Image (cartoon, rainbow, N blue to C red; front, side, top):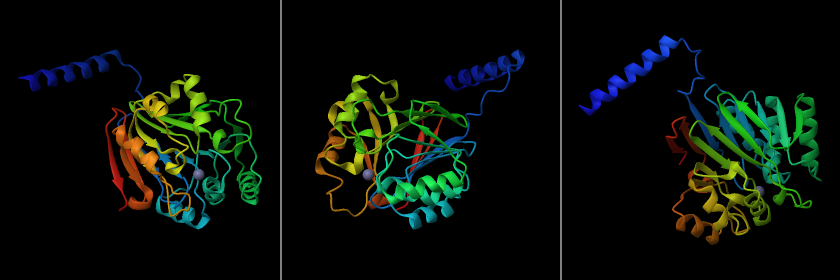
Amino acid sequence: MALLVVGITIALAACNRNDRRTPPEPDLAGSLTVRFLDVGQGDAVLIRSPEGKTLLVDGGRSTTRMAEHMRKYQIDKIDLMVATHADADHIAGLVEAAGAKPTYFINNGLAGTTQTWERLVSALQSAGTTFQKANNQVFNLGSAKVRIIAPPAGMGDDQNDNSVGVRVDFGEFHALLTGDSEKPETTAWLNQNRPEIEGPVQVYKSIHHGAANGDHQAWLTRVRAGNVVISVGENTYGHPTATALNLYKTNGIKVYRTDQQGTVTFTGKADGTYKVNTER
Ligand SMILES: [Zn+2]
């Protein structure tokens, strides 16, 4: 009986919509994919809208690794590229990804001091990419919204604490990535009561590869992540740390690790439901 009632309600809703002859809504029936590419020690997150629009947040430290991912996932056009900050484990692979002619490139406005940074700038210039400094812009990635979270004022010239944050919303499906932000930056964002950091979010990237100076309780209380992906490879920093792993455990956040599971992919629907696939 209950099923029958539901069926009738849906039928009526459909009739009403036809009768009013409203213009077609954006197609929210597709899926948004958020792919944490296995790039070893570093970050690279590939996001695709249901319409096939592409956002790449960071590129890992290896151009060959990025070239493999570009072939495998057919990255031939990038609509928006974000460098959270200019450290090599985030931007070296972007030099290769510049071959997909990004329409826009966003960074924190602090020029890197390395040859890798210079190579990236020149590759993007050759690609005809438009450069923008992070300024809380909102981009339409097909039917998904990309909200850029600018670093707060007063972070000096530290690259980690000037990491650019990125929130992606597709209906009720949400992802949040904040580079290698350390506690001063996330605390400043908390104090600003920024709406972009409000959870719950289904998909969340572990800050700074699971370092002890990244995620902390006050921040995780606000973000309310369902799943966290630690983008990490063999390293001498002790990433991910027991501090970070314990925090995720006590907060009931499901942990994925690219060093153990390879590339981790979330496929989300606009109603907030999602599936997770891991390479291993
Ligand atoms: Zn890093």
